[in-house]
Image 1 (cartoon, rainbow, N blue to C red):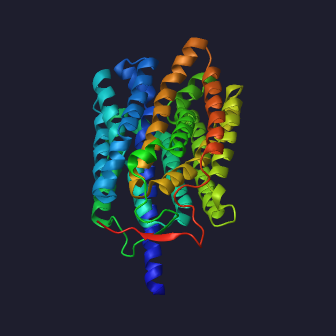
Image 2: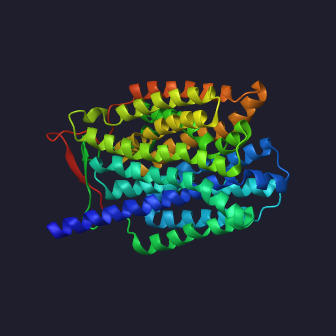
Image 3: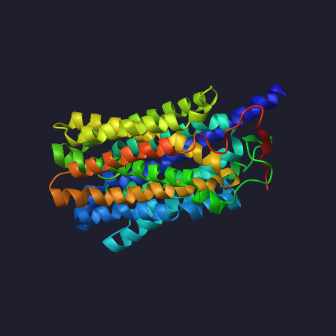
Length: 422
């Protein structure tokens, strides 16, 4: 029995590690276009406004496909769903290097966003199938730290590729890892563990609400708004931060790439910290606050950081502000996704996707708001003030959200519910 449990635990670790690698690849592919902005815009004769539309095309496609991709993972299982979407977006990454005109580039980035939309809802369904409630905080932290590390390494990796090849060949190369991952995942992974996971719930058997009531619930609407606010702040780090540093402080490509890594690495650390805090609080007498405390603390830091960045007179000072803001925003990720798994149950993929959809509407708004507000006011400060206001509103959202969703249970009232394969 001990050997069987140890084997099951190691398999869970490998599943989380595989999804960490997936998240790493996701953001390397996603953030590379920010580093490629200058040579791409120069060769294709694109203005900043057009590049803003290209950046936001990804966010729009990503947001629009969230709920369909979550339903897709719930319907056919995360094994096949993730393999399909990862291979698809990797091919589109390579196709990005073939673009010669604005229109086709816009379409490819929109389709790229649709394909990448399946990554995190599919991962959420994996966690629901494979992990008990008390381990989901750190699992989500590990997963999303991979995304931040991928985004951080995308800047120097792509800068290194640009020194040796042109931007087109660099995109061809970046398409390879995802194809390899998708094939390996399809061969190795199974939708359910051999030993079904026992979930705690306070609901009576057969009393689980349908998808519609869940989506319309107060907690879900608040979760969606706070995720919108968080992504509004975060998206500058993978879209406009790198070119902003280049232009505002007169940095070289390599200097801007090194600086741009710092906030993202801080964000990766924040995911681990928040994940550990979520699980530690869940196992403590403060279980009911295990999602709310990291969420509130994160948005306090995010609001402070963007206000700091708005007044920065030097590149190091600006990066410090971005780092604080990113650390804060990323502290809210693990509690947000854990909350969705709490309330989502068998709809975990779709519920998580709905929240992520709202978040990426925030990303779409952010990528367009930055050049728009700077053009209207002559300064980037207006963008930072807008982001700070949204972060403050998100603090209120967490204060009003239910203390714990479906997973809240005491030893005396919980009923074990097994997740079985279909």
